[in-house]
Amino acid sequence: MANDLSLKSAYTMLSGHKIPALGFGYPSDPPTSPKKSFSIHSKSATDMSVDPLSPLEIVAITPEQILSHGPCAEAIKKSGIPRSEIFFTSKVPPRAMGYEATKSSITSSFSQTGLDYIDLYLIHAPYGGKEARRGTWLALLEAQQAGRIRSIGVSNYGVHHLDELESYIQELEAQHGKGKGGEISVGQWELHPWLARPDIVEWCRERGVVIQAYCPMVRGQRFEEPVLKGLVEKYGKTAAQVLLRWSLQKGFVPLPKSVTPSRIEENADIFDFRLTDEEMKLLETGEYAPCSWDPTTSNE
Image (tube, rainbow, N blue to C red; front, side, top):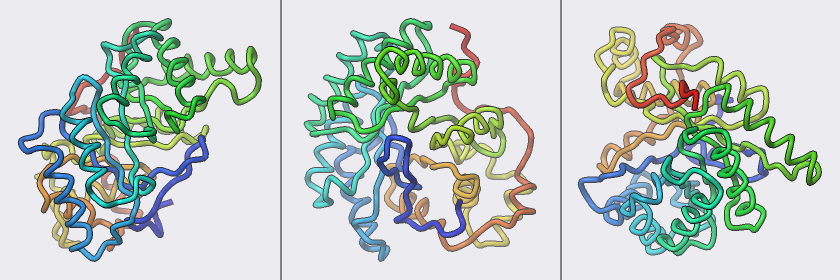
């Protein structure tokens, strides 16, 4: 899957829409304004001799974090990059689970951004209980059917949550017709060599769900690992770049997070080398070591 990837690469989701092979996660509490950072990033893409019309994915965090929505959307409009070349993701926060609350959350996203549509809307976490999860999915589905949201999916769902959602989708199809229950276009999890989640990955692979990886660089906590340092020396890349390359070769869509222009450029410079099969195996640690929260284990 990752043999011929470039900065222009994209995957086709079950919704039929495309998603860039590399995303850009925006911090919830950035030290500089999103508008400034995004405009610098866009200029940097041109300076790097990267086609400025390459797909660019911006992942805003959640509707209650206004800094990630309004200013990012304003920067998109002022960047000069066509809206069709930018992939904008938002999420339903845990506090907005349930049908009515999710509808309000979606309305808030549009009022804050002023966008005509949002490319991808994810359920941030499987909290709130079964009925809340079902209500949230239904609200997202209705917004998708109305053309306001192009693709929908989940984040931080365990296999048991995924099975539950799949059953609900089948239930909706039985009531309203085939294809009327929606599709899980994207699943997003913390993923890296120390948290590979093979059960979740297998579930998604079997169903064609695109897998996004947040914290792909493990927040820098593993940069001194001997196996990683050896690859850094061999390829003349940073530890972050090696980990992002691992993510790409696993078929994930990595979401490196930064507001530093030089780091953003560095994170995109991962298409000129390839880890060998042996090196990929060396990075199969078998560990289960989250560096962030882990809602996949929730039994609500």
